[in-house]
Image 1 (cartoon, helix red, strand yellow):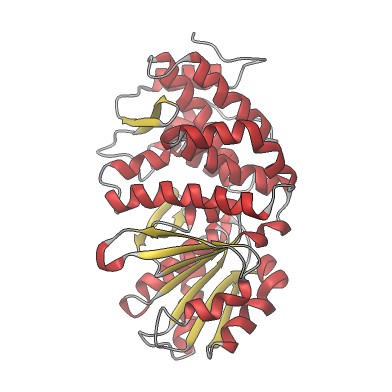
Image 2 (spheres, rainbow, N blue to C red; image 1 turned 90 degrees about the horizontal axis):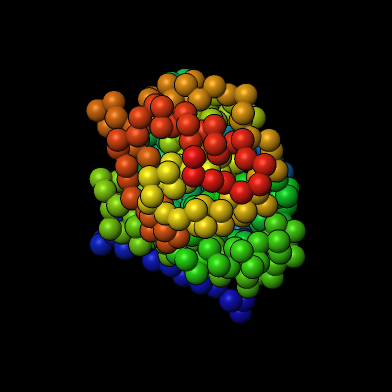
Length: 374
């Protein structure tokens, strides 16, 4: 039998497994059948993923006795809306779903978010399985129960915490991703390394090229995803609803979400925008003396190998600042930034001023070589 790794997300009676392996989509039905006694499955996917893997997904579920009702949406962040969720709900209710019916999110972060939100609010809550198909979804977005949609005023402003009953990760599905998607997803791996795991950071420095080029072994991908899921599970297990520790997972996201929004959710992949946000937050942390210039430089070198799109230098930093004010991570109108205190450690800072942010933005994106402390 092929090797798998299982990571548990420890939430008491709602503890659930993250099962990680390669080329195991054919086992989805068997795994899903243990989640609910019902045998109706609503699979939410996008056109790209479904065209590649839909037949295999449906066949596995049908062999396990499920009646499958796929709902296929358009790919892209611009479709992460209430309108999309309403269409999913219409589809489920028209199919006669009951409270034992299963919702499966089969795709990247957008699919997981809208499928999970639909599961959270349909009939006041349906069992939910995540089957992530992108790097960012496998290492981060599929674990932790955050679901929701975007609003014109900001990203992820409408949603609910709804934990899956199972996260089923087939790393073999990553083979269909473009190099740009791989790079963008690996930014989230770097995020976890900076805030929580120096060993993972070292691994990226030595082995990043193999992951980007698609030459890393199946075992290496399983190990990488499992390492990230262990970090996410540990944090979520201590702070499920982001009242404290879980906020550190937002490293790079305060500015990153604003960059995504100002780019109309089309200019940058999520991971790319987060990477640029990490550059700014890392620069501010260095200016404050929270981490050393050497550590900032190490982060910059890895980001330089991952970010293949030009930085958002045409965005006015005051526009980014104003866009950040609508972010759900602000409290009482005060913006919160995650800043590293060394590789493997981070904290939340709530006293950043606009001039400080603007100065860090300018320095972060106007470097020819190594960063410096201004």
